[in-house]
Length: 196
Image (cartoon, rainbow, N blue to C red; front, side, top):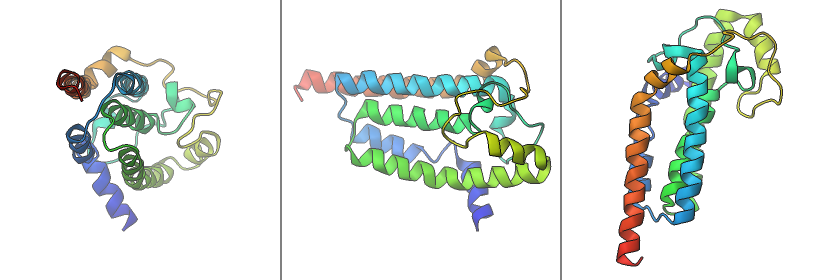
C-alpha cells in the first residue's frame, strides 16, 4: 500500500498542487504585504529548486524514482530533499501571496503537502537504500531529510552544478509561477480598484 501510494504520488506530483492552486486563486484576498511576503518566499523556494537542479540534472523529471550515483554536491550536502524543500517554499509563497481563506488554507496546504511527500520520500529512500546500500544509509544518518544541517556533508558529487542547465530544465515551472503570481497581483489590483 505504501509503495503503491508512493508511486502514484510520485507520478502525479506535478499535478496534485493544481486543485489547491485553483482554490487559492478563487478565494484570494491579497494585500500589499501578503504579496511582498509571498513573492519573496516563492522566489526563495525557486532559488533552492534551481540550486538543486543544477546538481541533480534532468533525472528529477522522470516519472518513476530511478537511481544513479548518490548526489551529495550543492544543497544535497545540507538536506536530503532540497527539491521538495523548494517545492514547499514555492507553494507556501503562492498561498501567502494570494492570502486565501486564512489561516485554514495554510493548514490544508501543509497537511496535503506532507501527506503526499511522506509517501514519495519513503519510496525514494527505500529505492536508494536498496540500490546504494551502506553509502546511502551513512548519508541518511548525517544529512537531515527536511531541515538543513549547518555544514556541508563530506564528499561532494558533483563538485560543481550547471546553473544554465537548471534554468533550462525549470523554464516551464518559472513560466507557470510568473503567470500565477501575475494573476494574484491582478486580483490585488482589481480589489483595490473596487475598494475591497
